Length: 323
Image 1 (tube, helix red, strand yellow):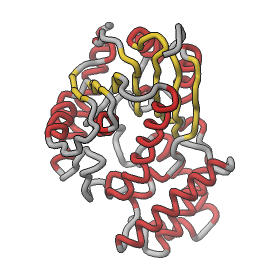
Image 2: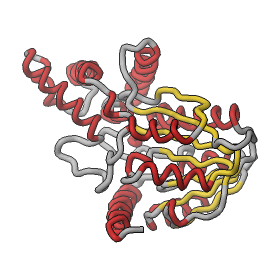
Image 3: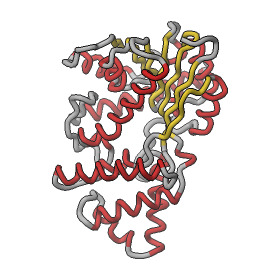
Image 4: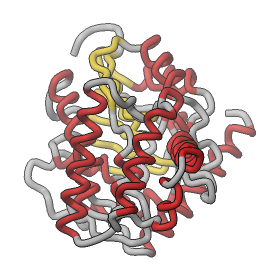
């Protein structure tokens, strides 16, 4: 591996170590079934267990559906870039034999601690966590999972080729990755309107956006800000998640996947709720009902082509024989 690649990985690991350490210190529990309210997150779905269920819970349901449909149960799964391990944990709870790997040492420490506290053991497969990069792995698996990871990689083609070598003949690659480059200003305009209406009724944390709804120019400017927020995955005042965040866009990722794997299923992920639900404020029952409505709206708009997704699911089979 080139020196620049090594230095890039070190910088990525440092960024994610810092990120997870801050979150845990603020009370974050990286377990979908034991999650708690955490005000550290001012706009993210991680703020409330109900929001987590709507977003990540749905994501896990899709993973399990795709694995059942195309692979079956009891498979060995390599979760690359597993972070604090919450997806790995759910797959193991569903009976899969999971190895979660990440280059961030602190994330793996926290993942191991969370696993040690797991009380949901009925039907549990197996789970282990290792501090490893994709390049350092030599074992083979039935499935490789990339859950929001490929867009951080500098050389997507090398990563996919390495994945091919680690997947057993007829095995699967499963991905959930951003497609921000295909999201549009008209999509952001819908989100801007939703946030303005929530603010005017007292249910959105940014009360100062009221003025953004009082003139065409002001609203248009706000819609552009929302667009940039989603494409960059951060507010304009926030630093990047990591040095290589959004290095590779969804079009390039999908092209590499389709070039190397037999596509079995492709479907849209979320469009906007993951950066809007967490901004809800107010009485719990009411904001949960609003979040439910936003979830239904998002799915309906995407199904009918009125909004584009910001993420996509992909599952493909390695050529060379069916499992």
